[in-house]
Amino acid sequence: MHWAITLGRIGGTAIRIHMTFLLLLLWIGVSAGLRGGSEAALANVAFIVLLFACVLAHEFGHILMARHFGIQTPEVTLLPIGGVASLERMPDKPSEQLLVAIAGPAVNVVIALMLVIVLGVSLDASSMTRGLASIDDPRHGILSRLAAANIFLVIFNMLPAFPMDGGRVLNAILAMNMDKRKALQISARIGQGLALLLGFLGLFGNPMLLFVAIFVYIAAAGEAAQGDLESMTSTLAVRDAMESKFVALYPEETLADAVDKLLATPQHEFPVVDHFGKPVGLLTRDALLAALRERPREASVMDAAQAPVPSVRISDRLDDGLREMTRAGAPAISVVDADGRIAGMLTMQNIAEMMMVRAANPDWKFGPRPG
Figure 1 (cartoon, helix red, strand yellow):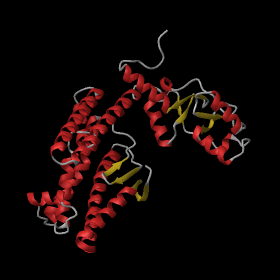
Figure 2: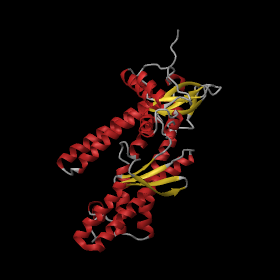
Figure 3: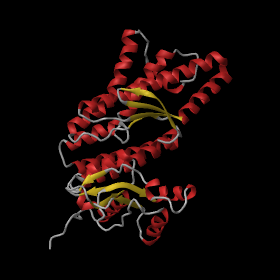
Figure 4: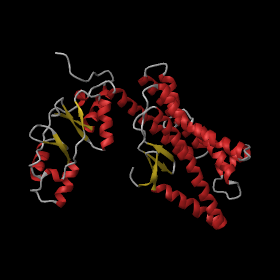
C-alpha cells in the first residue's frame, strides 16, 4: 500500500502504518491541546495509540486463526479508519471462514472483559456514550473510554455487511447451506440494503453515517465482484484463460526492438525467452518506457526486464495462477508446459475481460469448446 511505512514484524507479518494515521494523531493532539493544554493533548494521543493497539490485536485475531488453517498474512496496515490484514486468501470451507471472521471481534471482547473484570474499570451506559462520542475529552478516564471503544468495535464489526466481519460471518453461515456464489450475492445485497438504511438515517441524524453508508455500499459491491472472480477462477485451469497468441523477446534484442514490437502489437507485457523457449524475464510497457529515459536504444531488453520471471504450469488451477500474479506483484506471468517452455501468458487484462463476459452472460462456459 502506498504512503505506508513498516514499523516491524510480528511472526512474519509486517506491521505497516499509513501516513494519514500520523496525520490523525497530529489532528487529535492539536485539537485537544487547544482546548485543554499539553496534558490533554498527550492524554488523547495516548488514548488513540492504545485504541489502535486494540485494532492491531483485532487484526491478529484474524491472522492467527488464518494461520491455523495454513493461510499466511504478509502484512497488516493501520489506517485512520482501522486495520487491514492482507490474507493471502480466505479459507475454502465456510466453517473455517466463519472462525477467521469471528476471531477478530472475539479479541475485542476479551480486551473489554479484561479491562472491566481484571482492572475494575466501570462501564455503565453513560460511560459507553462518553467513550464513543467524546474520545478527545480529557475529563473522562482513558481505560473507561478504551473499554467502551472495544465494545463499540465489536458491535460495529458485527454489522451484517461487507467489509465488516459480520458480513463475512453472514456469508459463511449462508454458504454452509447453499451454493457459495449465491450465498455471496445474498450477503452482498443485505450489506447494500444496510448501507441504504444507514444513509437514510444519516440524512436525519449523524452526517457521518452517510460516509459510512457509501463506504459499506461500495465495499459490498466490491466483495461481490471479488467473489465472482474467485468462483470463476476456482473452476478453470490456467490454459482456459491464458493468451496463446503473443510476441516474445529474446535476451539479445535491444530496447529499440522492444519498441518496434510494442507499437506493432496490442501487448503491454512481453516475455523474454531463451532459444529453448524457456522464460527468463518479463518486460512491461512501463519498465520499457522507464528504461528509454535512462538507457540508449541499443541497450539489452534484459537491462529493463524483471528477472527471474514468475511462471505457472498450463495445467495449474486459474486461482493458483492469480495468486502467483498477486504474490509477484506482476501484471502478467508466463505459462509453461511440462518441459518448462513458454505456452502462453496470463494477464490481468485477460482475466478482467473474462469477468466482463461473465457479467454479460453468467452461464458462459470458458475453456475449449467441443468440435
